[in-house]
Amino acid sequence: MGVSGWRYRSWRGDFYPSGLPQRRELEYVAERLTSVEINGSFYSLQRPASYQRWRASVPGGFVFAVKGSRYITHMLRLRGVRTAMANFFASGVLALGPALGPILWQLPEREAFDQPVWEEFLAGLPRYTSAALALAREHDERLDGRAWLEIDQDRPLRYAVEPRSPSYADPAFTRLLRDQGIALALADSAGRWPQFDAVTSDLVYVRLHGSRELYHSGYTPDELDAWAARIRDWVTGAGDGVPRDVCVYFDNDARGHAPHDAVALANRLGR
Image 1 (cartoon, rainbow, N blue to C red):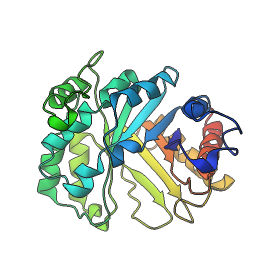
Image 2: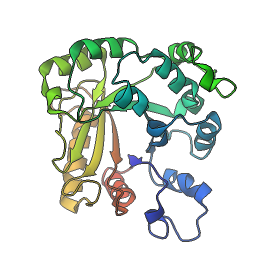
Image 3: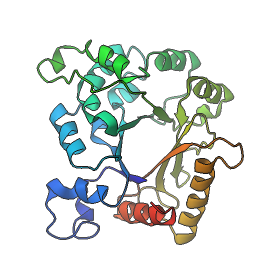
Image 4: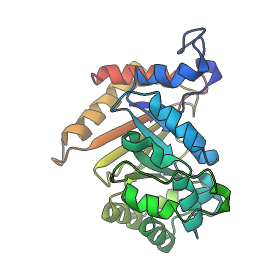
């Protein structure tokens, strides 16, 4: 249970107590929630020192979801991405060690489903940190002298995909994700983008952008109760008998609702 990002001015003096040093904001979040989504990795390659600092700020068992680079999803449009993927993994993602959770690929609304492109992209994703390390060693000159090229042990990697084009309602996409064990993100976006409800792996990845006003509206107690019920069903395997891990991130941060909603939902679930 967590939030998408944690460094927001509007949270200071509201969710964050007045006077809390900025360097301790992540620590404050981690005392109340179990996960955060790293947003900066979407916009640019971060540095190993940042990932190391974030990991050192949270307790054991805390999980970071990492947003994949928009250079890969929005600019290259998933095509010819091997070097860009190597740079992404060399930038310090692997420094999170046991705190590294799922990696999210958020797609632009204009990007329609293209099955051959997706087959090639998914086939190129490393499924273990050892494979990600091998790929990271192929980084280009931009990462010379600043690459993180080590792991403490080999761990599986998990991925989620958040499409925003209606074309992804194609059953072929759902089958492809199921075959590859990739989560199809369930995004609540006040109707701005499609909400895909299919469960395609042993991970359920939920992004709550706002139910009534994108990024701006908070969730009502009844809405939080409903989400808590759905999460319990996924965790216990109600329906199909398959228990699943669930990651939920509130992204309705424009008016500071996200952390309060996340804590309220976590309390409903006893977390």
